[in-house]
Image 1: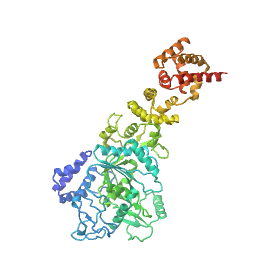
Image 2: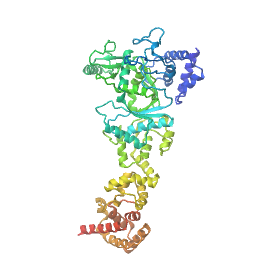
Image 3: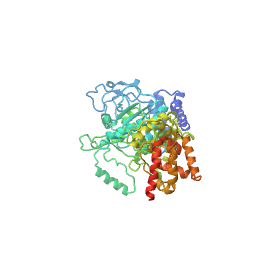
Image 4: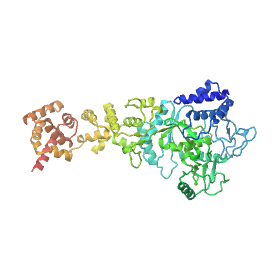
Length: 604
C-alpha cells in the first residue's frame, strides 16, 4: 500500500510540476524508493490505473511510467562471439555501464522467451555507441541534403543549438542522406555553408545516416528475432485495393495485419518488414511545446520499417540513430508530430528510452500558407548574397515563434542564454519580412565602421564589376549609406555612382527633374562648383545658397533634385552636400555638365 500511495503522490506531483525538468526523480528519491523491487510495484500500480485510449493521457502518468521502466531495466549482455554470432548480437548495454554482464551467462534465446535463471525478457536491442553514457542535454539537427537550407530548417537548427548551449549540453549535425537519388554533394555543401555563415556550430558531425546501414540492419534483424517485427509479402497493388475498399465504407485505413500471424521466413520472396504494435497500447508523450499528445496504436497500425529492397525507412533509421547518438531532446517542426507515435513504439520495441520531444510551430509565408521549398525558394545563402547580416537573420529566426517578454533585439549570446521551450508558441508563426529589414538596419547601424567596410567591399566590387578598395571618402560615406539602407547589397547599390565613370538616369527621375526649366540653374551651379578651392560640405552649401539667391530664391528641392539625378542617376541619395563631397570635384562637375547637355539635346 505504501508503494501505491507513493505512486499516487508522484503522479499528482507531475501534474502540478509539469514545467519542472525532472520532478519524478526528485519525488522518488525524496520517498526513498531506490530498489528495483519498489519500482516494479509502482509500475504495476500504474498499469492498474486503466487503459489509455484517449488522445491526451495525463502527462504525469506517461513520464512516471517512463522513469520507472528506466529504473527497473535488467542487465543486458555483451556478445562474446561477435565475429561469428548472428546479426542480432548485442553490442552494448542499454542501461547504465556498470550493469553490463558477460553474454556467456545467457544462452541463445527464442523470441519472447528466456531460459530459467536468466533474465525475464527477450534479448535487448543493439546499442551502437561505445563508451560511457553521456549525461545532460544532447540535441541534433538532422536535415536532408536534397535542396536549399530553407529558413524553416535554419530555425530548427537554431532552436536545437540554442537549447543545447543554454543547458551546457552538446549539439550534433546528422545528414540524413539515405535518399541517394535526391541527396547531392552540392546541397550538402550549401547546407554546411549556410550553417557556418549563421554561426551555428556543432560538437559532433557532420555524421551521415547512410554510414549507419549496418546499424539499421542489425536493429531490424533484432526486431524480427524477438517477434517485435514480421515480414509482409503484401504487394503495393494489393494494399491499395484493400485500402480503397475500406475507405469506400467510410472507415479510415490502417494496415489490416494480414501477414501479422504468418510464419514468413527470409526466403518468402519480396517482402517488407513491419513493426508489430500492441493494438491496446497508447503511444503518448508529454511534448515540451504542445503538452500531452499521443494516439492509440490501433489508429496507426503495423507500419513498415524496411522496404522490399532492404533499405530502412525513415522512422526506423532516425530512431536507431538517435539512440546511437544518445539524443536527449528532439526539437523539430510540428509537421513531424504525425511521426512521433510510431517512433515511440520503435523506441519501446528497441528497449530504448525515448528522448523528450518538442515540436515547434510551422512558419507561414504570405497569405498564411505554410512555407514551401518550391513556392518560397528563399535560402539562407540567398539572404547572405542579398547582403543581410547573419546577426540580423539569426535574431529574426529566433523571434519567429519564440519570445522573451517584449524584447526584440537579441545578440547571439543572449539567444543562447535566454532561449527556452516554455516560451515557444503553439500557433503557426507568421514570418514578417519588414521586421527582418528593421533588424538588419539596426545591426548595420551598430556595426563598427571598419568592420562594415570590410563586409561591404565584396558587394561594391560586384556593383562596379572591378575590385574596389577602401578610401577615406568611402569610409565617410558609409555612415550616410547605412542610415538609409537595410542590407549590404542595398548600400552597395546606393554607392554605385561612386564606382562608375558615368551614370545612367532612372527614367522616372529624369523625366521629373532633368527638364528644360532646370537647365539655367544647373549651368550656374556648374560654374560655381568648378571654381571652388575647398571641396567639403560647408563650401558646397555656400555655393548652393549663392546659386539659389542668383535665381530669385529658388527652392532647395528645385536645385538639389536635378543635381542629385545628374550625379547619381537616382532621385534618392544621402544629403546632397555629402554626396558631392564623396564623389569628388572633378566627377561632380563633369556629371552636372553631362546632365546639362542631356537636357539641351532633348530640348532641341
